[in-house]
Amino acid sequence: MGAGLGLVAGDPAAPGTPVASTAAEVARLAATAEDLAALDGLVSVCRACPRLVEWRETVAATRRRAYAGEHYWGRPVPGFGAADARIGVVGLAPAAHGGNRTGRVFTGDRSGDWLFAALHRAGLASQATSVHAGDGLTLRHTRILAAVRCAPPANKPTTVERDTCRPWLDRELALLWSTLRTVVVLGGYGWSVLWSALRDLDVTLPSPRPPFAHGREVRLDRPDGPPVTVLGCYHVSQQNTFTGRLTAPMLDAVFGRARELAGLT
Ligand code: SF4
Image (cartoon, rainbow, N blue to C red; front, top):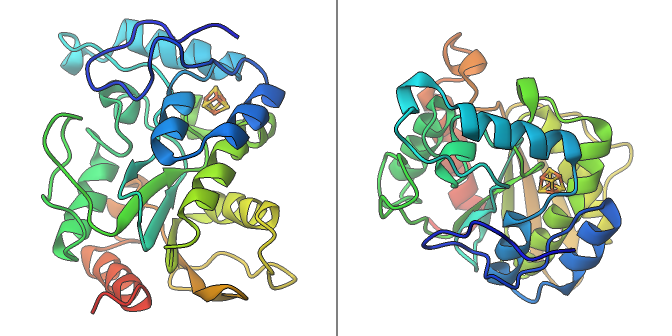
């Protein structure tokens, strides 16, 4: 392992932050993170998936014409939001010219426009737009996590990449677990990855696993605290929002329900 390179202002990593270069190192380092700040630093310098490292850095070097004058992040994108969140939101992976450009999840792309506008309408985000990492946006009671932390080609991580990245999600959930009351899962991919992460957390799960569906709720009882409800929601991808499969009122209903489940109404 080497130290993180090319650090920038507001960077979650420090010059000595260890770099995971293999799946085993991801698992080992994730387990050492004592809080979300430490975890974010470790995630942000990870290089464990060679294909994704090459892709994210190539995209950052070549850039899209509209952003030719910008410096791309080109690194893994950590979770974003409150460290004592009651509501988790799980997405798939950063977009090549969204999170991979701005360094903040769902920031600077159309999917994020939909998500943050809905979070703002629900009183969970300080502003309706999420344009760049220094725009002052904060989340209330909410943290956004991703199943995979590097932008994948065609939005499709391989099975190995998915599994290599999961210890970061496992650890993030473990650090949030005592305050979480609900997890909104955007799409079937995140639904299945979340299930694996919950199994690793030793959460008692229904069997067989309920299939993903928009609006589906699965209540998970736990012996040491109030239940956590997993709540399915179509992904805010353009494929869904352009076609009307997912509408703003549908998103509002999901986040209104998440607020209820989190005891925020
Ligand atoms: Fe590391 Fe996850 Fe990115 Fe793979 S996808 S390099 S495990 S942060």
